[in-house]
Length: 268
Length: 245
Image (tube, rainbow over all chains, first blue to last red; front, top):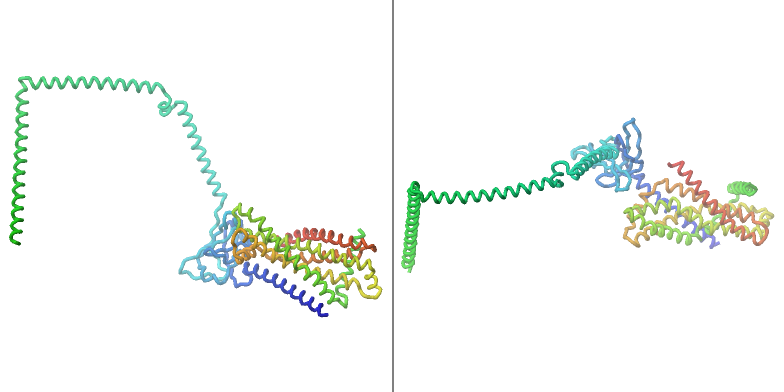
Protein backbone atom coordinates (compact mmCIF):
# COMPACT_ATOMS: atom_id res chain seq x y z
CA UNK A 1 0.00 0.00 0.00
CA UNK A 2 2.85 2.31 1.00
CA UNK A 3 4.59 1.51 -2.27
CA UNK A 4 1.49 2.48 -4.22
CA UNK A 5 1.32 5.84 -2.43
CA UNK A 6 4.97 6.45 -3.20
CA UNK A 7 4.31 5.67 -6.84
CA UNK A 8 1.39 8.09 -6.89
CA UNK A 9 3.53 10.84 -5.36
CA UNK A 10 6.32 10.27 -7.87
CA UNK A 11 3.93 10.30 -10.82
CA UNK A 12 2.29 13.44 -9.39
CA UNK A 13 5.61 15.26 -9.00
CA UNK A 14 6.71 14.24 -12.51
CA UNK A 15 3.46 15.39 -14.09
CA UNK A 16 3.45 18.68 -12.17
CA UNK A 17 7.06 19.51 -13.04
CA UNK A 18 6.60 18.75 -16.73
CA UNK A 19 3.36 20.72 -16.97
CA UNK A 20 5.15 23.55 -15.16
CA UNK A 21 7.94 23.42 -17.77
CA UNK A 22 5.37 23.58 -20.56
CA UNK A 23 3.70 26.59 -18.92
CA UNK A 24 7.05 28.35 -18.48
CA UNK A 25 7.80 27.73 -22.16
CA UNK A 26 4.44 29.08 -23.23
CA UNK A 27 4.92 32.11 -20.97
CA UNK A 28 8.39 32.79 -22.42
CA UNK A 29 7.12 32.57 -25.99
CA UNK A 30 4.12 34.70 -25.09
CA UNK A 31 6.33 37.31 -23.46
CA UNK A 32 8.30 37.63 -26.67
CA UNK A 33 5.05 38.20 -28.50
CA UNK A 34 3.98 40.78 -25.85
CA UNK A 35 0.96 38.66 -24.90
CA UNK A 36 1.20 39.21 -21.17
CA UNK A 37 1.98 42.93 -21.22
CA UNK A 38 -0.04 46.06 -21.78
CA UNK A 39 0.33 47.12 -25.36
CA UNK A 40 -1.01 49.71 -27.76
CA UNK A 41 -1.39 49.85 -31.52
CA UNK A 42 0.13 52.23 -34.06
CA UNK A 43 -0.61 52.25 -37.75
CA UNK A 44 1.60 53.11 -40.68
CA UNK A 45 0.63 53.16 -44.35
CA UNK A 46 3.18 52.10 -46.92
CA UNK A 47 3.13 52.00 -50.69
CA UNK A 48 5.30 48.90 -50.58
CA UNK A 49 6.06 46.83 -47.49
CA UNK A 50 9.05 45.13 -49.13
CA UNK A 51 8.38 41.60 -47.85
CA UNK A 52 7.47 42.56 -44.26
CA UNK A 53 5.55 39.79 -42.49
CA UNK A 54 3.23 39.56 -39.52
CA UNK A 55 5.33 38.88 -36.41
CA UNK A 56 8.38 40.85 -37.55
CA UNK A 57 9.97 42.97 -34.86
CA UNK A 58 9.43 46.69 -34.30
CA UNK A 59 12.56 48.50 -33.17
CA UNK A 60 12.83 51.86 -31.47
CA UNK A 61 16.29 53.35 -30.71
CA UNK A 62 17.67 49.89 -31.48
CA UNK A 63 15.49 48.06 -28.94
CA UNK A 64 12.78 45.54 -29.82
CA UNK A 65 9.61 47.15 -28.51
CA UNK A 66 6.90 45.24 -30.33
CA UNK A 67 5.83 43.22 -33.33
CA UNK A 68 3.93 43.67 -36.57
CA UNK A 69 0.37 42.61 -35.76
CA UNK A 70 -1.25 42.72 -39.17
CA UNK A 71 -0.74 43.93 -42.73
CA UNK A 72 -3.88 44.88 -44.65
CA UNK A 73 -4.24 46.13 -48.19
CA UNK A 74 -6.15 49.42 -48.14
CA UNK A 75 -6.13 50.17 -51.85
CA UNK A 76 -4.23 49.17 -54.96
CA UNK A 77 -1.30 51.35 -53.91
CA UNK A 78 -1.32 51.32 -50.10
CA UNK A 79 -0.93 48.74 -47.37
CA UNK A 80 -1.66 49.47 -43.71
CA UNK A 81 0.65 47.91 -41.16
CA UNK A 82 -0.55 47.60 -37.55
CA UNK A 83 2.25 47.65 -34.96
CA UNK A 84 1.65 46.23 -31.47
CA UNK A 85 4.01 48.09 -29.16
CA UNK A 86 4.71 47.82 -25.43
CA UNK A 87 2.82 50.39 -23.38
CA UNK A 88 5.91 51.39 -21.41
CA UNK A 89 7.65 52.92 -24.45
CA UNK A 90 4.59 55.02 -25.36
CA UNK A 91 5.85 58.24 -23.68
CA UNK A 92 9.03 58.14 -25.77
CA UNK A 93 7.37 57.81 -29.16
CA UNK A 94 6.31 61.35 -30.08
CA UNK A 95 3.86 62.48 -32.68
CA UNK A 96 5.75 62.91 -35.92
CA UNK A 97 7.64 59.66 -35.35
CA UNK A 98 8.51 57.93 -38.60
CA UNK A 99 8.24 54.22 -39.34
CA UNK A 100 10.64 52.74 -41.87
CA UNK A 101 11.21 49.20 -43.09
CA UNK A 102 14.75 47.89 -42.88
CA UNK A 103 16.56 44.58 -42.84
CA UNK A 104 18.09 42.89 -39.82
CA UNK A 105 21.64 42.04 -40.87
CA UNK A 106 22.71 40.84 -44.28
CA UNK A 107 20.50 37.78 -44.47
CA UNK A 108 18.06 38.72 -41.77
CA UNK A 109 14.35 39.35 -41.51
CA UNK A 110 12.60 42.58 -42.31
CA UNK A 111 11.77 44.83 -39.39
CA UNK A 112 10.11 48.16 -38.68
CA UNK A 113 12.33 50.87 -37.24
CA UNK A 114 10.68 53.78 -35.46
CA UNK A 115 12.54 57.06 -35.32
CA UNK A 116 11.47 59.59 -32.73
CA UNK A 117 9.50 62.67 -33.70
CA UNK A 118 10.13 66.28 -32.64
CA UNK A 119 11.36 66.64 -29.06
CA UNK A 120 8.58 68.99 -27.92
CA UNK A 121 5.76 67.03 -29.53
CA UNK A 122 3.23 65.14 -27.42
CA UNK A 123 3.48 61.34 -27.17
CA UNK A 124 1.44 59.22 -29.56
CA UNK A 125 -1.93 57.80 -28.57
CA UNK A 126 -3.40 54.35 -29.06
CA UNK A 127 -4.38 53.66 -32.69
CA UNK A 128 -2.57 56.74 -34.03
CA UNK A 129 -1.27 56.66 -37.56
CA UNK A 130 2.36 57.68 -37.92
CA UNK A 131 4.37 58.72 -40.94
CA UNK A 132 5.83 55.90 -42.93
CA UNK A 133 8.83 55.87 -45.26
CA UNK A 134 8.75 53.33 -48.02
CA UNK A 135 11.69 50.96 -48.15
CA UNK A 136 14.32 51.23 -50.83
CA UNK A 137 12.98 49.66 -54.00
CA UNK A 138 15.74 47.39 -55.22
CA UNK A 139 14.13 47.17 -58.65
CA UNK A 140 14.49 50.94 -59.12
CA UNK A 141 18.09 50.81 -57.93
CA UNK A 142 18.75 47.99 -60.38
CA UNK A 143 17.10 50.01 -63.17
CA UNK A 144 19.42 52.93 -62.47
CA UNK A 145 22.40 50.63 -62.24
CA UNK A 146 21.55 49.16 -65.62
CA UNK A 147 21.48 52.72 -67.07
CA UNK A 148 24.92 53.35 -65.59
CA UNK A 149 26.13 50.08 -67.05
CA UNK A 150 24.81 51.03 -70.50
CA UNK A 151 26.67 54.35 -70.33
CA UNK A 152 29.81 52.55 -69.25
CA UNK A 153 29.43 50.23 -72.20
CA UNK A 154 29.21 53.17 -74.63
CA UNK A 155 32.26 54.79 -73.05
CA UNK A 156 34.31 51.62 -73.23
CA UNK A 157 33.26 51.07 -76.86
CA UNK A 158 34.43 54.57 -77.74
CA UNK A 159 37.68 54.06 -75.86
CA UNK A 160 38.21 50.81 -77.74
CA UNK A 161 37.64 52.68 -81.06
CA UNK A 162 40.19 55.30 -80.09
CA UNK A 163 42.70 52.62 -79.13
CA UNK A 164 42.18 50.86 -82.48
CA UNK A 165 42.72 54.13 -84.37
CA UNK A 166 45.89 54.83 -82.39
CA UNK A 167 47.12 51.32 -83.15
CA UNK A 168 46.39 51.85 -86.82
CA UNK A 169 48.44 55.06 -86.71
CA UNK A 170 45.46 57.26 -87.47
CA UNK A 171 45.01 60.68 -85.89
CA UNK A 172 47.70 62.91 -84.39
CA UNK A 173 48.50 60.59 -81.41
CA UNK A 174 48.62 57.58 -83.70
CA UNK A 175 50.93 59.36 -86.14
CA UNK A 176 53.11 60.59 -83.29
CA UNK A 177 53.52 57.03 -82.01
CA UNK A 178 53.68 55.02 -85.21
CA UNK A 179 54.68 57.32 -88.15
CA UNK A 180 58.43 57.12 -89.14
CA UNK A 181 58.21 60.06 -91.53
CA UNK A 182 57.40 62.39 -88.60
CA UNK A 183 60.51 61.24 -86.78
CA UNK A 184 62.75 61.66 -89.85
CA UNK A 185 61.31 65.13 -90.52
CA UNK A 186 61.97 66.03 -86.89
CA UNK A 187 65.52 64.77 -87.21
CA UNK A 188 66.01 66.86 -90.39
CA UNK A 189 64.65 69.90 -88.61
CA UNK A 190 67.06 69.37 -85.73
CA UNK A 191 70.12 69.16 -88.02
CA UNK A 192 68.93 72.28 -89.84
CA UNK A 193 68.54 74.06 -86.51
CA UNK A 194 72.07 73.05 -85.53
CA UNK A 195 73.45 74.45 -88.81
CA UNK A 196 71.53 77.70 -88.27
CA UNK A 197 72.94 78.08 -84.75
CA UNK A 198 76.47 77.54 -86.11
CA UNK A 199 76.07 80.21 -88.80
CA UNK A 200 74.61 82.65 -86.20
CA UNK A 201 77.67 82.08 -84.01
CA UNK A 202 79.97 82.79 -86.96
CA UNK A 203 78.03 85.97 -87.73
CA UNK A 204 78.32 87.24 -84.16
CA UNK A 205 82.09 86.58 -84.12
CA UNK A 206 82.45 88.68 -87.29
CA UNK A 207 80.31 91.40 -85.74
CA UNK A 208 82.50 91.69 -82.62
CA UNK A 209 85.62 91.96 -84.84
CA UNK A 210 83.93 94.73 -86.81
CA UNK A 211 83.14 96.57 -83.57
CA UNK A 212 86.80 96.38 -82.43
CA UNK A 213 87.86 97.80 -85.75
CA UNK A 214 85.35 100.65 -85.37
CA UNK A 215 86.78 101.55 -81.94
CA UNK A 216 90.17 102.13 -83.52
CA UNK A 217 88.72 104.20 -86.39
CA UNK A 218 89.65 107.96 -86.11
CA UNK A 219 86.06 109.08 -86.58
CA UNK A 220 84.72 107.24 -83.55
CA UNK A 221 87.91 107.07 -81.35
CA UNK A 222 87.03 110.35 -79.53
CA UNK A 223 83.61 109.08 -78.57
CA UNK A 224 85.02 105.89 -77.00
CA UNK A 225 87.78 107.79 -75.11
CA UNK A 226 85.24 110.19 -73.58
CA UNK A 227 83.20 107.24 -72.52
CA UNK A 228 86.25 105.70 -70.81
CA UNK A 229 87.12 108.93 -68.97
CA UNK A 230 83.52 109.34 -67.68
CA UNK A 231 83.59 105.76 -66.43
CA UNK A 232 86.94 106.36 -64.62
CA UNK A 233 85.62 109.53 -62.95
CA UNK A 234 82.60 107.77 -61.68
CA UNK A 235 84.73 104.99 -60.21
CA UNK A 236 87.00 107.50 -58.40
CA UNK A 237 84.07 109.36 -56.91
CA UNK A 238 82.62 106.16 -55.59
CA UNK A 239 85.99 105.27 -53.99
CA UNK A 240 86.19 108.66 -52.26
CA UNK A 241 82.70 108.37 -50.84
CA UNK A 242 83.50 104.92 -49.48
CA UNK A 243 86.65 106.24 -47.72
CA UNK A 244 84.70 109.14 -46.19
CA UNK A 245 82.12 106.77 -44.76
CA UNK A 246 84.88 104.59 -43.27
CA UNK A 247 86.50 107.57 -41.53
CA UNK A 248 83.18 108.78 -40.03
CA UNK A 249 82.30 105.38 -38.63
CA UNK A 250 85.81 105.12 -37.06
CA UNK A 251 85.28 108.42 -35.26
CA UNK A 252 81.91 107.44 -33.87
CA UNK A 253 83.37 104.22 -32.44
CA UNK A 254 86.16 106.17 -30.68
CA UNK A 255 83.70 108.62 -29.12
CA UNK A 256 81.59 105.76 -27.77
CA UNK A 257 84.64 104.10 -26.21
CA UNK A 258 85.74 107.35 -24.51
CA UNK A 259 82.31 108.01 -23.01
CA UNK A 260 82.16 104.44 -21.68
CA UNK A 261 85.59 104.75 -19.98
CA UNK A 262 84.53 108.09 -18.44
CA UNK A 263 81.46 106.50 -16.95
CA UNK A 264 83.57 103.66 -15.45
CA UNK A 265 86.05 106.11 -13.84
CA UNK A 266 83.20 108.17 -12.35
CA UNK A 267 81.67 105.14 -10.78
CA UNK A 268 85.05 104.19 -9.31
CA UNK B 1 -8.24 -6.19 -44.00
CA UNK B 2 -9.09 -8.50 -41.20
CA UNK B 3 -6.40 -6.90 -39.05
CA UNK B 4 -7.75 -3.43 -39.80
CA UNK B 5 -11.27 -4.50 -38.87
CA UNK B 6 -9.95 -6.16 -35.73
CA UNK B 7 -8.13 -2.98 -34.74
CA UNK B 8 -11.28 -0.92 -35.27
CA UNK B 9 -13.22 -3.28 -33.02
CA UNK B 10 -10.41 -3.10 -30.43
CA UNK B 11 -10.52 0.71 -30.57
CA UNK B 12 -14.28 0.59 -30.03
CA UNK B 13 -13.81 -1.69 -26.99
CA UNK B 14 -11.20 0.71 -25.60
CA UNK B 15 -13.46 3.75 -26.13
CA UNK B 16 -16.46 2.06 -24.56
CA UNK B 17 -14.46 1.00 -21.52
CA UNK B 18 -13.02 4.43 -20.78
CA UNK B 19 -16.33 5.77 -19.61
CA UNK B 20 -17.68 2.57 -18.12
CA UNK B 21 -18.13 2.50 -14.35
CA UNK B 22 -15.34 1.16 -12.23
CA UNK B 23 -12.37 2.91 -13.84
CA UNK B 24 -9.22 1.32 -12.45
CA UNK B 25 -7.51 4.43 -11.00
CA UNK B 26 -5.00 2.43 -9.01
CA UNK B 27 -3.86 0.43 -12.03
CA UNK B 28 -3.87 3.59 -14.16
CA UNK B 29 -1.52 5.35 -11.74
CA UNK B 30 0.70 2.26 -11.54
CA UNK B 31 0.96 2.25 -15.33
CA UNK B 32 1.72 5.99 -15.31
CA UNK B 33 4.54 5.25 -12.88
CA UNK B 34 5.90 2.45 -15.05
CA UNK B 35 5.48 4.25 -18.38
CA UNK B 36 6.36 7.78 -17.29
CA UNK B 37 8.48 7.81 -14.17
CA UNK B 38 10.59 4.77 -15.04
CA UNK B 39 11.42 6.25 -18.47
CA UNK B 40 12.71 9.56 -17.11
CA UNK B 41 16.38 8.52 -17.09
CA UNK B 42 16.41 7.15 -20.62
CA UNK B 43 14.44 10.04 -22.09
CA UNK B 44 16.48 12.65 -20.20
CA UNK B 45 19.80 11.32 -21.46
CA UNK B 46 18.45 11.00 -25.00
CA UNK B 47 17.00 14.53 -24.99
CA UNK B 48 20.17 16.11 -23.62
CA UNK B 49 22.37 14.34 -26.16
CA UNK B 50 20.08 15.24 -29.08
CA UNK B 51 20.41 18.96 -28.30
CA UNK B 52 24.11 18.66 -27.60
CA UNK B 53 24.92 16.81 -30.82
CA UNK B 54 22.63 18.92 -32.99
CA UNK B 55 24.39 22.07 -31.80
CA UNK B 56 27.86 20.64 -32.32
CA UNK B 57 26.93 19.50 -35.83
CA UNK B 58 25.31 22.70 -37.02
CA UNK B 59 27.51 25.29 -35.32
CA UNK B 60 30.53 24.95 -37.67
CA UNK B 61 28.34 25.20 -40.78
CA UNK B 62 26.49 28.25 -39.50
CA UNK B 63 29.82 29.75 -38.43
CA UNK B 64 31.04 29.50 -42.05
CA UNK B 65 28.06 31.58 -43.13
CA UNK B 66 28.60 34.06 -40.31
CA UNK B 67 25.19 33.13 -38.96
CA UNK B 68 26.30 31.72 -35.62
CA UNK B 69 23.68 33.74 -33.79
CA UNK B 70 21.03 31.58 -35.45
CA UNK B 71 22.22 28.45 -33.58
CA UNK B 72 19.80 28.77 -30.61
CA UNK B 73 16.82 29.48 -32.85
CA UNK B 74 17.66 26.64 -35.19
CA UNK B 75 18.19 24.18 -32.34
CA UNK B 76 14.99 25.15 -30.55
CA UNK B 77 12.81 25.07 -33.67
CA UNK B 78 14.17 21.79 -34.98
CA UNK B 79 13.99 20.05 -31.59
CA UNK B 80 10.61 21.31 -30.47
CA UNK B 81 8.88 20.99 -33.82
CA UNK B 82 10.18 17.68 -35.01
CA UNK B 83 13.18 15.91 -33.55
CA UNK B 84 12.11 15.93 -29.89
CA UNK B 85 8.59 14.49 -30.30
CA UNK B 86 9.56 11.90 -32.92
CA UNK B 87 12.73 10.59 -31.32
CA UNK B 88 11.21 10.42 -27.84
CA UNK B 89 8.17 8.65 -29.26
CA UNK B 90 10.43 6.14 -31.02
CA UNK B 91 12.41 5.60 -27.82
CA UNK B 92 9.13 5.07 -25.94
CA UNK B 93 7.96 2.71 -28.65
CA UNK B 94 11.07 0.65 -28.06
CA UNK B 95 10.79 0.68 -24.31
CA UNK B 96 7.05 0.82 -23.57
CA UNK B 97 5.29 -0.80 -26.54
CA UNK B 98 7.59 -3.82 -26.33
CA UNK B 99 7.06 -4.23 -22.59
CA UNK B 100 3.27 -3.88 -22.90
CA UNK B 101 3.20 -6.30 -25.85
CA UNK B 102 5.31 -8.85 -23.97
CA UNK B 103 3.35 -8.43 -20.73
CA UNK B 104 -0.10 -8.82 -22.30
CA UNK B 105 1.21 -11.53 -24.65
CA UNK B 106 2.48 -13.63 -21.75
CA UNK B 107 -0.80 -13.03 -19.90
CA UNK B 108 -2.63 -14.27 -22.97
CA UNK B 109 -0.36 -17.31 -23.26
CA UNK B 110 -0.71 -18.18 -19.61
CA UNK B 111 -4.51 -17.71 -19.98
CA UNK B 112 -4.65 -15.01 -17.29
CA UNK B 113 -6.82 -12.88 -19.58
CA UNK B 114 -9.23 -15.76 -20.07
CA UNK B 115 -9.29 -16.27 -16.33
CA UNK B 116 -10.21 -12.60 -15.85
CA UNK B 117 -13.02 -12.91 -18.35
CA UNK B 118 -14.30 -16.04 -16.62
CA UNK B 119 -14.23 -14.34 -13.24
CA UNK B 120 -16.37 -11.56 -14.75
CA UNK B 121 -13.56 -8.98 -14.39
CA UNK B 122 -13.24 -6.75 -17.45
CA UNK B 123 -9.73 -7.36 -18.86
CA UNK B 124 -10.03 -4.57 -21.41
CA UNK B 125 -10.86 -2.04 -18.75
CA UNK B 126 -8.22 -3.25 -16.34
CA UNK B 127 -5.37 -3.98 -18.73
CA UNK B 128 -5.92 -2.08 -21.97
CA UNK B 129 -7.63 1.19 -20.99
CA UNK B 130 -5.20 1.92 -18.17
CA UNK B 131 -2.13 1.25 -20.30
CA UNK B 132 -3.27 3.19 -23.35
CA UNK B 133 -4.35 6.18 -21.25
CA UNK B 134 -1.11 6.08 -19.27
CA UNK B 135 0.88 6.13 -22.52
CA UNK B 136 -1.28 8.91 -23.99
CA UNK B 137 -0.67 11.14 -20.98
CA UNK B 138 2.93 10.27 -20.13
CA UNK B 139 4.55 10.46 -23.59
CA UNK B 140 3.74 14.21 -23.95
CA UNK B 141 5.18 14.88 -20.48
CA UNK B 142 8.31 12.93 -21.33
CA UNK B 143 8.61 14.87 -24.59
CA UNK B 144 8.34 18.22 -22.77
CA UNK B 145 11.13 17.12 -20.45
CA UNK B 146 13.27 15.93 -23.37
CA UNK B 147 12.73 19.23 -25.21
CA UNK B 148 13.80 21.23 -22.16
CA UNK B 149 16.88 19.06 -21.66
CA UNK B 150 17.71 19.21 -25.37
CA UNK B 151 17.80 23.01 -25.15
CA UNK B 152 20.06 22.68 -22.11
CA UNK B 153 22.24 20.27 -24.10
CA UNK B 154 22.33 22.79 -26.94
CA UNK B 155 23.53 25.47 -24.56
CA UNK B 156 26.27 23.18 -23.21
CA UNK B 157 27.24 22.34 -26.83
CA UNK B 158 27.59 26.00 -27.74
CA UNK B 159 29.70 26.62 -24.65
CA UNK B 160 32.23 23.99 -25.62
CA UNK B 161 33.54 26.19 -28.44
CA UNK B 162 32.33 29.64 -27.47
CA UNK B 163 31.02 31.36 -24.42
CA UNK B 164 27.33 32.20 -24.54
CA UNK B 165 25.40 33.07 -21.39
CA UNK B 166 22.42 30.87 -20.55
CA UNK B 167 20.14 33.92 -20.50
CA UNK B 168 21.11 34.92 -24.03
CA UNK B 169 20.86 31.37 -25.36
CA UNK B 170 17.42 30.67 -23.91
CA UNK B 171 16.16 34.14 -24.80
CA UNK B 172 17.16 33.62 -28.43
CA UNK B 173 15.76 30.08 -28.41
CA UNK B 174 12.36 31.24 -27.25
CA UNK B 175 12.42 34.34 -29.45
CA UNK B 176 12.58 32.04 -32.49
CA UNK B 177 9.61 29.98 -31.32
CA UNK B 178 5.98 30.63 -32.08
CA UNK B 179 2.88 29.08 -30.59
CA UNK B 180 2.43 27.44 -33.97
CA UNK B 181 5.63 25.49 -33.22
CA UNK B 182 4.80 24.41 -29.68
CA UNK B 183 1.09 23.63 -29.71
CA UNK B 184 0.98 21.24 -32.70
CA UNK B 185 4.08 19.43 -31.46
CA UNK B 186 2.53 18.94 -28.00
CA UNK B 187 -0.77 17.82 -29.51
CA UNK B 188 0.85 15.26 -31.79
CA UNK B 189 2.71 13.67 -28.85
CA UNK B 190 -0.71 12.69 -27.40
CA UNK B 191 -1.36 10.80 -30.62
CA UNK B 192 2.11 9.25 -30.52
CA UNK B 193 1.45 8.12 -26.95
CA UNK B 194 -1.90 6.70 -27.91
CA UNK B 195 -0.33 4.83 -30.85
CA UNK B 196 2.37 3.35 -28.61
CA UNK B 197 -0.13 2.17 -25.99
CA UNK B 198 -2.67 0.98 -28.53
CA UNK B 199 -0.24 -1.00 -30.68
CA UNK B 200 1.44 -2.55 -27.61
CA UNK B 201 -1.90 -3.59 -26.13
CA UNK B 202 -3.34 -4.82 -29.43
CA UNK B 203 -0.31 -6.93 -30.30
CA UNK B 204 -0.15 -8.41 -26.79
CA UNK B 205 -3.88 -8.95 -26.46
CA UNK B 206 -4.13 -10.67 -29.83
CA UNK B 207 -1.03 -12.83 -29.62
CA UNK B 208 -1.51 -16.50 -30.36
CA UNK B 209 -1.17 -19.32 -27.93
CA UNK B 210 2.50 -20.32 -28.30
CA UNK B 211 5.42 -19.22 -26.12
CA UNK B 212 7.23 -17.78 -29.11
CA UNK B 213 4.23 -15.55 -29.79
CA UNK B 214 5.19 -13.46 -26.72
CA UNK B 215 8.44 -12.49 -28.37
CA UNK B 216 6.70 -11.95 -31.67
CA UNK B 217 4.09 -9.73 -29.99
CA UNK B 218 6.80 -7.61 -28.38
CA UNK B 219 8.74 -7.36 -31.61
CA UNK B 220 5.84 -6.47 -33.86
CA UNK B 221 4.57 -4.00 -31.24
CA UNK B 222 7.82 -2.04 -31.54
CA UNK B 223 7.92 -2.18 -35.32
CA UNK B 224 4.25 -1.25 -35.80
CA UNK B 225 4.37 1.51 -33.17
CA UNK B 226 7.45 3.05 -34.83
CA UNK B 227 5.77 2.93 -38.21
CA UNK B 228 2.61 4.47 -36.79
CA UNK B 229 4.64 7.28 -35.21
CA UNK B 230 6.26 8.16 -38.52
CA UNK B 231 2.93 8.04 -40.35
CA UNK B 232 1.18 10.15 -37.70
CA UNK B 233 4.03 12.66 -37.86
CA UNK B 234 3.62 13.02 -41.62
CA UNK B 235 -0.12 13.57 -41.18
CA UNK B 236 0.46 16.02 -38.31
CA UNK B 237 2.78 18.14 -40.48
CA UNK B 238 0.13 18.38 -43.18
CA UNK B 239 -2.58 19.35 -40.70
CA UNK B 240 -0.32 21.94 -39.03
CA UNK B 241 0.50 23.49 -42.38
CA UNK B 242 -3.19 23.60 -43.27
CA UNK B 243 -4.13 25.30 -40.00
CA UNK B 244 -1.27 27.77 -39.53
CA UNK B 245 0.10 28.60 -42.96
